[in-house]
Length: 238
Image (cartoon, rainbow, N blue to C red):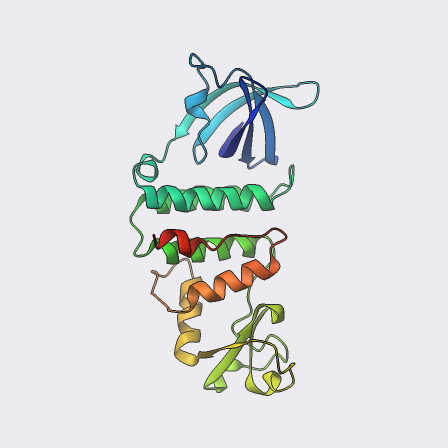
C-alpha cells in the first residue's frame, strides 16, 4: 500500500503510532513495533512527508506495520528549514482535520503535488502556504466566493470596492454590507485586490504578492476549522 506519512508519535516504550494518508483508505493509523530502537530497520522510512510503500498485518486493536520502503524522500524539503516548516505545518493540519478512514483520493494527490512543488523554491513561502492551506480547505468543501456577492448573488465586478468577513463565505457588495450588523468587522478589498485574490487562488498561475492575502486566508480557514490553527505567518517571519 502507498501513502504519505503525516505524523509519528510515541506509543509504549519502543513503539510508535504512524499516521499515513493513502489513496485507497484515506487516513489510517498503525503501530510500528520497536521503531524507536537503534537497530530498527523501519525508522528511517517513517519520517513525516515521505512517500512510502508499506505492508500491514491485523493486530488486536490497531493494524501493525510489517515493512516500509521509501519511494520519494523529498530531500530538498528536509535540507531547508523554511521548506521543512511549510511541509510540517501542512501535514499536521491534514492529520488534525481529516478523520480516520475518510477516503478522498484528491487529498492524496494534493499532498504529492504540493510536496513536489515545495521542492522548488517558491517566490514566497508564506504565500505558498497561504494558497496551499486554502486549497486544502477547498477539498474539505470550504471555498470562498469571490466572483459574486456571497449574500445577494450580484456580480461584484461592478463595484469599486467589496467587503469580506469569513462568516459570509466570501466577498459581499456595498448594498449587502449596509444591511449587516454595524459592529461586525469587515475589511475592504479594491477591484485590483480582488483580481489579485482570484489570481492567488489559481494553482496554474504564479504567486503574486498580495498584501492582505494572508489575512484573508487565515481569517477564512480559522473561522471554518473545527480545530484551532496557529498563525503560520508569525513563525515564517522569524
